[in-house]
Amino acid sequence: MAESPAPATSPASNVVGSSEEYRGWRGNGRGWFSLTDFLGMGGSLLREVSAGDALQQAAVFCCLDVLAQDTGKAPIRLRKRTRSAGGHIGSAVMLPEEHPVAAMLWLRPNRHMTWPELIEMTVWHLGFVNNAYWMPARTVGGSTRELLPILPARVRKDAWMKEREFVYRVSVSGAVDRIMLGTDADLLLFEDEIVHFATRRLNGVVGASTLALAQRTLGIVEALQEFQARLFKRGDMPRGVFELPAGQELSQPQYDRMVASFREALRGARDDDDPLVTEGGAKWTRIAMTAVEAGMNETWDRAVTETGRIFRIPPYKLQHYANVKYENMSSMAELYADESLIPRCRIMEERLTFALLTEREIMQGLYVEFDRESLYRTDIKSRTERAEKLYKIGVITRNRALEMIGENPAESGDVYMMPANTFLIDTNNQVIVTNQGQAGDGGKPKDETDQEPAGEPAEEPAET
Image 1 (cartoon, rainbow, N blue to C red):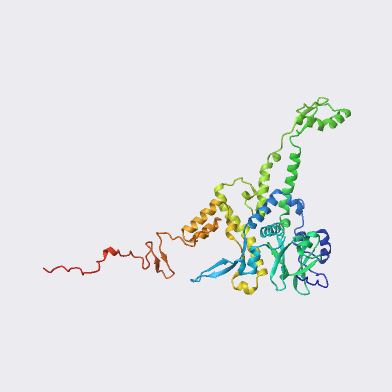
Image 2 (cartoon, helix red, strand yellow):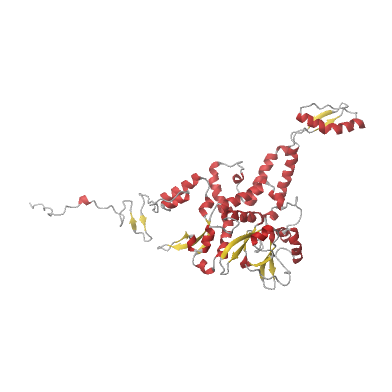
């Protein structure tokens, strides 16, 4: 891919800060973090949570793992819209030999990664910073040869006011970037030279980072983790105070000895069950756990639920089964696929369709799509029951039902099951097949035994 020439001057106005900020951006690696200032989100926060701090929160990286793995398990295919004889629109998967894009989707996106790896990486970026980037490496003829991922922190989207265009500045630094992108120099890419996935485009240009928008929630969870660490770091170390009899005070030597030996005495009491010996009539009074400390589990449950709400993940996906019933998991899984997985997949599908196909091919009915059945799959029981139900009511063929549960097709499996107690009627309300298998108006067929046998005519009754 040929590198685009850089503009003569740095853009005076860009979508994520000033041109002066860009000069320091490459060195400090902030990338998307300036979006908080752009959205006017400065102010009183409990604490500023960096990307590294957020990823150390178990609920955060578990949410991102779940999103990435559930999306990565679905194969992505090139499909073509079809039209039946009755005019109904369907679709069919295109095989690798039918189109170069179909071949790439069946093989791998680049020589370094497989499709599940690339999809998981992309969904991680989308879930965390709501921006992900691929650079298509094209042949001389213009067809896409590879799709190369770019870290969001390496990309900055600028407005080139002179040309009224958006451009992407890609900072190439480090051996990984040089090998992956195949260049040592920074890149300036136009919109047709990069695939930009973004969710939550508040300004219509870049995605608003979850890390930036959820600072307060993540800050509370961070403070809770620190409090929990301090609480359990002490273990079962007894806590309490020394009380002296009324009117009695410790001398300075007594006080110094007590302070010097206090920690060691507590360790001995904890590890070896040694008694605490006090001086000067001092009495040890133990302090019980406070209500806040005793309610740590309940507070932690709420923190996990709140983090899952940010990423739109049901609690059971985070191995958090409080107040979750098994019979509700199937409906929650379908809701999770509808509201969390498919919206992200739709954004990726549309961007890839326009990046990999020409407008003529799109108008001919070609499009890129994740396998919807894989996104909705839960347990084997649910998949089997769904396939069985669709087959028995004649919606899918036997081979399609076998495919849904991961089995090989049968030799004579491209058949539909027609329930025996139903009628098959066309769009003109004409009965095609009755429950007796007779075409026509649905009446009972005449029994052949009721007819007179061929041969001599029946004898007429004699007149009397």
